[in-house]
Image (cartoon, rainbow, N blue to C red):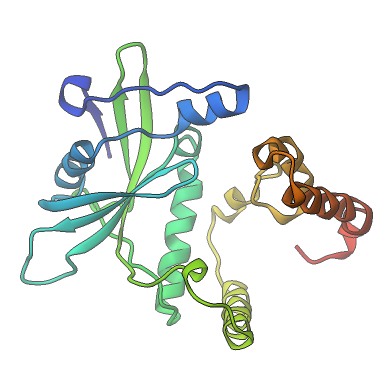
Length: 235
């Protein structure tokens, strides 16, 4: 499903930033307003919004959305708008959605993937910014309440539980199959663990302090001790 939105209705504006990487990220990251998010909820998913709040994100855009109470179903959702680069790879988002559904069916405490009015798991929204048309993949998940680990005192028991959950997740995903699974294999993806050396170009963000020294040491050790043995590890 695709819809084209005019800037007069969505008020879309580009953002600019200095530096090649930061400028590229700024141009690809969505900049939808809360009003635009509300409009998407109604036009794409058929849900009437009562309140919407922006959430932190890296290169996508997330909103915590409350809808007008209905007889059945949840009243809180997460609206996810993918950046323009990711939106060019709909197979990737499709596989991610199926993984979420697979894990939920396996008993993991995950969100539910919601359907659009056209009964799809995503919608491609095209926005006319005046100088060009940009497309963003939009999807909706039910809101999963909880507290970030960063806000909870760390204990050995908590670390054990996190490790146990990660191991169960890993074992369960060994059974996951999808014809487009290969879309997850992105060689230069910054979050791929074998791409730790790619972090060097972001060291500037740490300034000159002890933390930077530690990160530089970790990257150096990774190159020396891990990269040389990478072929022996199971991916």
